[in-house]
Length: 122
Image 1 (spheres, helix red, strand yellow):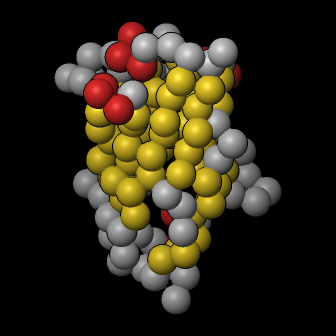
Image 2: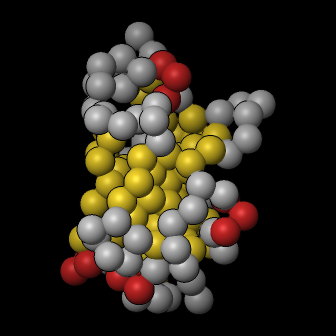
């Protein structure tokens, strides 16, 4: 059974940092792509970052470029999203999803975690 579990979300002040984790079970993580998406109230789910099975291939939304970093720890079967210089507009529920290849279309991701809340506010 494929399972993804996000953790690490919290309340943080603007300019602060968080590290989100996506822990995988039921499959070998390094054979698939993992994407981070976020969804704010009243908005559609949008892509934030993605890492393909090859760690040479990573992608970032323009809105987070230079602030967020996606990494893979194969020994822990976990993907991380390091978020620095957080802004109020980063506030959302963050989800990780499983796909065969990175995509900005959430419909290409067949499995999702339950989400973790990130709130950026003073």
